[in-house]
Amino acid sequence: MTTDPHPWAATLDDLHAPVWMQLVRGIRDCCASAWHLTLASTSPGGWPGARTLVLRGADCAAATEQERKD
Image (tube, rainbow, N blue to C red; front, side, top):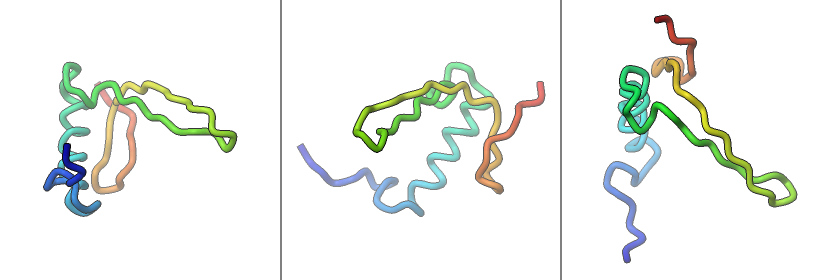
């Protein structure tokens, strides 16, 4: 097993474009992996928590989510 990152994930700058490409695809395609996002974190006490979100819209230029207008 290797711990080397994928070439597109070596730096945050390299990761930015592929992530936004997946998010934009997730807005248009309900079968895309980014349509349902799971965000996870831990509490200050170390307890895990996860939430699944449905991606409705995103604005790459502003780097924010947006309400989808159907």
